[in-house]
Length: 123
Image 1 (cartoon, rainbow, N blue to C red):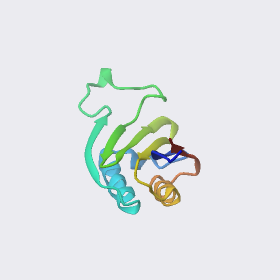
Image 2 (image 1 turned 60 degrees about the vertical axis):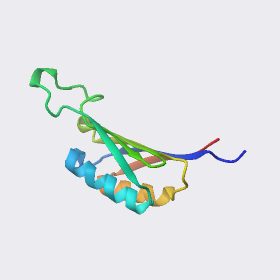
Image 3 (image 1 turned 30 degrees about the horizontal axis):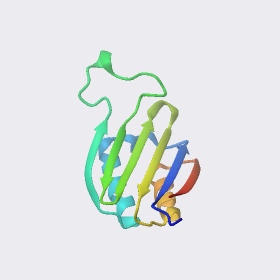
Image 4 (image 1 turned 90 degrees about the horizontal axis):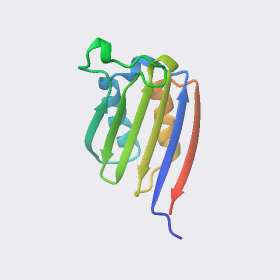
């Protein structure tokens, strides 16, 4: 069967938490999309920006920023976890892309000390 799409799954640990802000993530999306030749579309955020202090997330497994960057051929999804210094990223596209380039750009951007990846051909 011919592949429908391609998904790169990255678990990054020991990251620079200063890179977890909306502004920094905006720049990351610009850089990774340029590096793997993807066209950015809409982006959506889920975080504590504008949330009252008592409603903010405090658990290590929920305190952070999540974003969905739609690309013309699918999505890039990012979940940051501030207290764990971790980032979880999925890049999915029906257009081929160089997963090694995406991984390198991502590891460098977040200053990850460790990165586990899985690359899947979706059929």
